[in-house]
Image 1 (tube, helix red, strand yellow):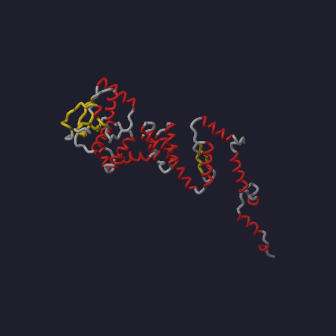
Image 2 (spheres, rainbow, N blue to C red):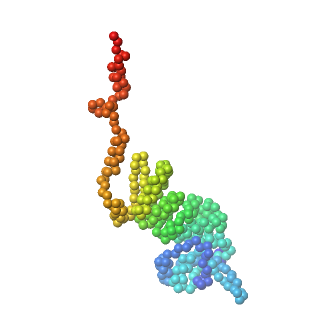
Image 3 (cartoon, helix red, strand yellow):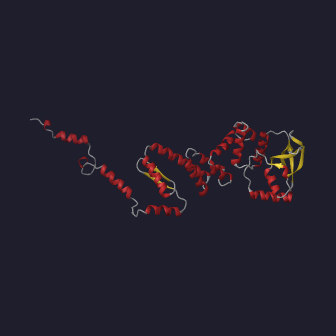
Length: 328
């Protein structure tokens, strides 16, 4: 570690340490910071911070020594919260901006302090500002290239999903099924809200995402039928929830999403506003009667036991009594 300043630990005033502009971490849990501050008051800082030394020219002349934080921002914040005036630090010299970012990311990854969104943004900074390939980032981080690429995909999610992920309201695993619906942003947000408020598992979310994608494909197979699409939208507007119309060769099903028994009663009230009572099998009976009319059996084509008569047999019987078959 030739970049270390004499391999020594220095005590530095907290007000002389500037935050790291390349710090990948954006979210700091206030409760955990207070717990760490209590620990620092009792035991002190057990692991020194890492800083770089800066010489800043003063307006009135001369140089002012400042320090820029490379790693340990959480410890610095907790120390300031605890009212500690000085902190132990290792001073590094000659580091480039890229090295500062790399060190900050590495420290957070090794301590598992970065959430998925901060980690993805740190990878993006390495890729855009320092022109690293995904494979190069993976090598430096000790991860696979797929891990880096999948982390970066998270950033394509809507901002409200990213905020929920940062705050721990959903897990990184939940982002996979949401990303499956990237071509359908409205469905993406609905699925996200279902994960958030219905507390569904990753596996359940994946099943739901696959079903939505499958339903989309089936709709394309049965297209064009703008009337069905229009009816589905009208159902959703009237009921205030997602409605699926699953078409089949004959008929189909209507699926209505709900979140509580109150929702079910509200849906039933909406339906009952017409004030018309229907029998459970009324639609089926109508369908059977319509098909019965369309498929009426000619009585001349069945025998006395209602068995179908072979047309060739009928023709033979008629020929039997044809006058041309008699001779004198």
